[in-house]
Image (cartoon, rainbow over all chains, first blue to last red; front, side, top):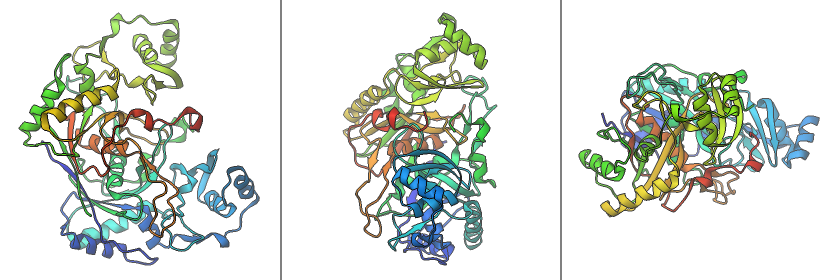
Length: 252
Length: 252
């Protein structure tokens, strides 16, 4: 009845370089931390280490801004090379603010500046794009970790996103495998045997937020979190189930 | 370095009735669960048990709909009495969809149907409003629990909210005391000694989402979660710090 949910930040992940074998590095870090994987465990990784291993680094000097990027750069006070990358990574610009461009990312979610990161990148003038296909990254990582451990696992790739209406970023799903994104509780009885009116729960987003709490953000950050006690059964899933179709979205 | 975050759902909370002494009930449930409170622990409670203890139940038959409520009821297919309550609990209607009214709640956050709940309410025809002042509820509860335990604690009152752009509800802060809502990491060095560009983190919202994962939603739900290992230092706080000022919000 009272099964706890435990999130353990894993230290000992070295700086990831393009081409690094992330599965192997994760298994080593878990072994060092004395954790042996069990059925139902979930591993949460930041998009940053997945992107670095997949060599999603771009040298801004080698990006030629389009005229639209030049114009948006003037409007927002942002680097035109960066704006060009934001546009290439996006399917739609939704809002333009001071220093921020809110887009629908080509992966389907809404975020600021297409999730392009220029902190935690070693070379000045370079930036880091989100993984090409975070669901596929999660699936591949899960397969490797399951084969090595013999356990049935989930893998969740997360990024920090801002939100409408509220201050502060929260950890958010950008790719997943082996755990549900959305859990449908509709039709279950409530305490007094009425049918619940809500409820689809953004379960992997709740877990992404939880993991972000212990990842930290800066120099002391842990890019990997081990989760035991995730309460919903394993299944195949993809980011798409968490994305509200545009025609049902009152806030586009 | 690798301090885990542990969230333990506490069973054994009885059905809460108006006037119940919530602090006493929580202390009993924790004792039954064998948990003794320590400095830095956080207790997360659903708004529902706070509302019930504070007698925020309303009989819909005793609410007289205004003409505006009648009109919105026709537009949305909702009960006009319920719509009247939604309007009374709100400072602004932001969007109207099929079966849903998105408002700025009088407490300042944006949510669907003013957070009024008609599941988990014992009497048919009655609904449950959110607490009158969830920050004050959290403060009062914290004071009682600290006095009884001698430990320095945080108390977080949460509700499940829908989101722009994404499917699924997530646990969200509606009141807090003794833990930060928003944590400002701006100016901290990143891995390579640049200054971080982001970041204000919605720390208590990340914790609210984490706790919701283990609360469940329906008959088997646990309205209380004990948290050990919340990574940010205690301070006084209020919901206001998590609310984006309207003039900085691109999605109103």
